[in-house]
Image (cartoon, rainbow, N blue to C red):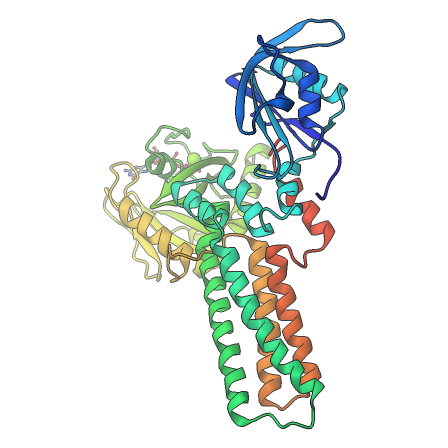
Length: 453
Ligand SMILES: Nc1nc2c(ncn2[C@@H]2O[C@H](COP(=O)(O)OP(=O)(O)OP(=O)(O)O)[C@@H](O)[C@H]2O)c(=O)[nH]1
Ligand SMILES: [Mg+2]
C-alpha cells in the first residue's frame, strides 16, 4: 500500500442534514473506530465481516460520555474506495455532533484528510487512473443531466480506455521505429513506411476527434458563460427574466436600472448556461453606474457567448453601433428586442434573432442559436467527450508531436528523431491517465476536490 497514516474527514456537506458521515481510511481506521464505538452487544468492528453496518454509540473513552447514536460501516481492504481499510461513522447530520466525533477520531490517532485525499489514495493505490479520479469531482459538480452523463462515462473508464488504446498503438509504433535504431543497416521497406504512416494517421484522427469534442465537453463541465449586454433600457433584464421564466432582475421603464452583474444558471437543451445580466452601457455620470458599465464591458470580453441586445423599436443609436463593432462575431448573437412594437431598424448582421422579451416570441429560436453559436458547428453529444482543459492540452501536445513525427517520416529524418517525437506523444497521453503526471499537477488536481472525498 502506498500510504501509511490513517486519514479522517467529515464527508457530508456543512450544515444540518438527516445524516452526517465521518470517514476514515488507512490501516488504523478500524482500530481507531473500535476505541470510540460501543455496540449494545459488545461487538468489535475488527471482528466484524467486511462491508457490514453495526449499530451503537460513539463514546468518549476519557469521560465515558455518549456523543451520538450511530451506524458504523466497516469496509476492509482491498475492495474499498481507497483500497485501504475504511470506516464510515453515520451520525446525526448536525455540525456539532459531526465536529465532536471528528475531533475524537483525530485525538485517537487519525490525521485530518486534505481535500480530495481519499480519491488521491484510490489513484495512488492503483484502483483508478487519474482521468477516472478527476471524473469523481465532475460527477459531484455536474451542472446538468448531460454533464452528469459525461462525467459518469469518464468515471467508468470510457476516456481511459480510449487513452490506453492510443498509448498501445503509439508504443507499437515506437518499438517499430526503435528497431531501426538498433539495426540501422536493414532498410525500411516501403510497405513498412506506409504502415507507419497509416498507423500514425489513424492515431492522429482519433486524437483530433477527441479534441473536437471538447468544445461541447468543456461547456458540459464548466458551463457556458453568457453575458447579456447592450444600451440601457433595451430589455436585457427582461430577457434574463424571460429565459429564466422567473421575475429575477428588476425591470423598470427608466434607463440605468441594473447596476451589478446578476448571475443565474439555466439549462438550455442540456447545456449548462451561466447567464449574466449586466448594466446598460452608456456614458454614465453616476459613480456606481460607471462601475456597473465597466463590469458590463468586462463581462462582454470574458464571456463565451454574448447576447448583444438592441431595442428594435427605436432607431439605431451610436452606442449600439459601437457595441456591434466591438463584439466578436464568432461568439455574439445580435438580439433585436421589442419586436412587438413597430420595428425601426434594419440591420443585416449574420447572427441575428428578433425577439420580444415581454411576450416571449423568438425565445426558442434564440436558444437554438445560442447552442449553435456556442458549439461553433461542432456536434453535441457522442460517446467520447473530453470535458477537461487539462486533457485537451495534453491531447494537443500529443498531436503536435505526432505531426512532427509524420513530417519527419516523409522528410526521411533519422529514426532517433522520430523516436523522440513518439515518446513525447506517448508521455502527453500518459499525463491524462496519470502515468507521467508531475507531482505538482497531481496535487493541484486533488486540491480542487472537497474535503472528505
Ligand atoms: N414593448 C416591449 N417592451 C419591453 C420589452 N422588453 C423590455 N421592455 C420594456 O423596456 C423597459 C426596460 O426593460 P429592462 O429589462 O429593465 O431593460 P434593461 O436593458 O435591463 O435596462 P437597464 O438595466 O437600465 O440597462 C421596461 O419598461 C420593459 O418593460 C419588449 O419585448 N417589448
Ligand atoms: Mg437591467
